Length: 345
Image 1 (cartoon, rainbow, N blue to C red):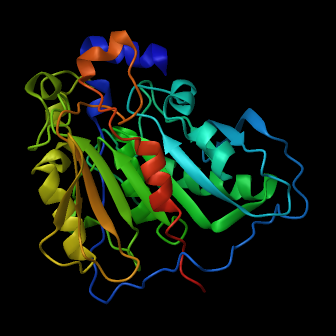
Image 2 (image 1 turned 90 degrees about the vertical axis):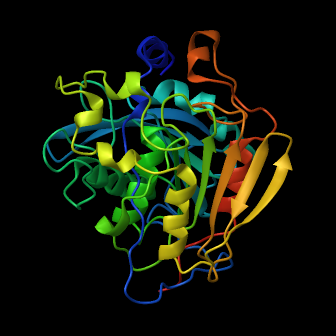
């Protein structure tokens, strides 16, 4: 991913693509309980994987897909462990992200498995298509199929708690995290997108709310905090030659980040007015009062760019903007994840 991100620093366009889908409901959403018993995967009692990082691949549909899995020392093959899926940005790859976020090391400390899958395409991406489908979260989408199959595969190889599967990611990966919460809401307990929350309105319907803790920099030079893409990004050619701003999925970037999160909160039945709190000198947390289990919150780094708070960028990626180091997004999202599990039954 370091190589990919270095290229992105020159063009600053690859990380901008993606979208996020939210719940639209006609019936009350079912809450979830963090205190529920674990839901052991098939690998519990038979899995013998040892601690460390491994690379694997499999064919899903007509595509060969690959990923890196990091198993913590706590994995004994008998005790179900949570799973955190982290998704790289558009034009990046898994190898740098796995170490960049610090989630592998945090998993060693807290006792959860981390998996970092690879996207698809000439310029690796998640979820979106170049044709009229645009942002596609149907069950047949190759990435929805892949992540579902990946959870199945890991559940056989490891002893996982299938009630505690979480998704995060940056940019297109963060946007895809919320799209997967739409398409796989019965399998994903909570999400935490970074630099990538958008609202696609009624295009997504789920049976239950998927709690969300979003992060975004107010000075993001790519996915603009006040809405849209930076002009030089929107006018840049995509992989198929069409300007990024003219792709079928470009509408998902409309509206300020705060309004997008407010749209999610409304669909979850949360109170209309959030409660902002300054949690660091340049960091504000905007949290909504929601029905039990349907948490919605946005963490805004007022000095932050297109970055993961608490994870310093290498010098060649400085054009992506300032990294707020007052908070640690990885620790914050894990604390958030640990409060949520899928509902019983």
